[in-house]
Length: 88
Image 1: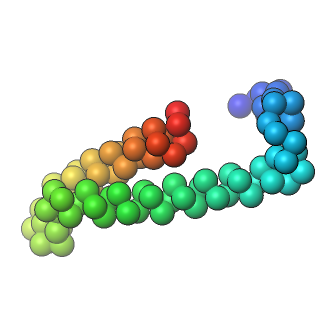
Image 2: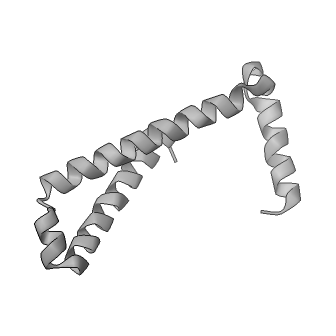
């Protein structure tokens, strides 16, 4: 992004977000969302790999297959987080 884009984003935040966000609460809010997303990500990946039977044995026997399946779990988790938590 160019510098002008950042200033436009900052102006948008200052103009349209509730007054509470103007005085330091925006960073706290965003940090909280980040923490929630990180916790949700790790839990979802763990749940998905257990459901799909991705084990340490698979990792030892076929690393490429294990990596592919773990990457699929991560992609699914990211989609859920974007849709449910971040709402993109």
